[in-house]
Image 1 (cartoon, rainbow, N blue to C red):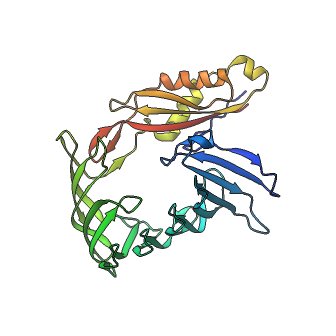
Image 2 (tube, rainbow, N blue to C red):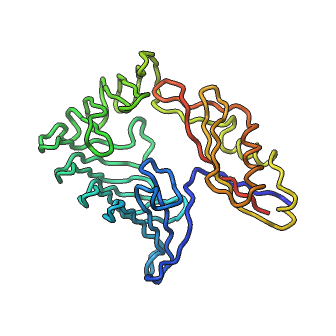
Image 3 (cartoon, one colour):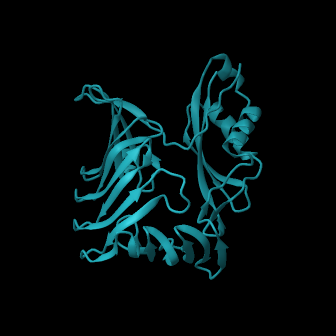
Amino acid sequence: MKIKLLIALVCSQFFVQNSNAQNSELISYFKNSGTKVNHVDSADYIRVISMPEGMSTLYNVAEYYKNEKIKFSGKSSKVEPLTYEGTVVHYYPTGKRKEIIPYQNGKKNGDNYRYFENGKIYLHATYQQDERPGMDYLIVDCMDSTGKVTVKEGVGHYIGYDGDLKRVMEQGDVKEGQRSGKWTGVTGFEKGAMSYTEDYDAGKLVSGNSTDDNGNNFTYTQRMVQPSFKGGLAGFGRYLGDGIRYPQWERQQRIQGRVVISFVVKPDGNLDDFKVIENPNDRLTAEALRILKISPKWQPGVFYGKVVRVSYTVPVAFRL
């Protein structure tokens, strides 16, 4: 029997029946980092996906903070992976809107608006689904928290904040809506943070120089390079398909399931720190772990020119 192995970067979820509703709902629990957890007590927010209504083919997606206030609302054409369609809205824990983003076929497309928690608008950007080099959006207007304009109609000085619009992360000049000239910034505020200076031409990164917290310097032309198996995901799929041995008893009993394992791709390309996220069957899981632990070296991830440890999640579906 041929084993089918499905590989994707996804979050696992489970169905429950809401006794007070007519439709089934898909409920998941997450940390702010996006990591799925099994219990609401360990979660920072809750995601609820409900079935399409009426003649619609789109699933309703809502996320809630632990204080029960809405965190996110939108619609998706798929449950896994979520593929947003139309306008989605992010909210602050206070209930005030944080960001409005239009989507088409799962990609941002159109006018995006972000707001400070005081209700004043921070950014108006336009996403375009095309093959332009550089950024995938144009900066139209940008204001500070008092309402002072720093970028108007694509020209000015942009100030970029963290996700909560609390701390400045980067800044630089904008021309025709795109990054131009020298930009400076930092990547974080904990240990491992890096400061950087970059040069742009019409939105395209020409070169970058970064310094880590130990004073080491790096150069780059691409901010982030994800770790990869030789041959990419297709090559990784072939490696698993050729190497996995379906446990005999499970095959005889026609036991199937999806094993989800996270691991770290180390700077030397070796895999480490394996964690089982979904365990449908002990022997299926043991086999998935075995083949991952003997994997050839990967091409490591690179972050602002520095080779770093990167977490990776792989679901492996055993099908007969």
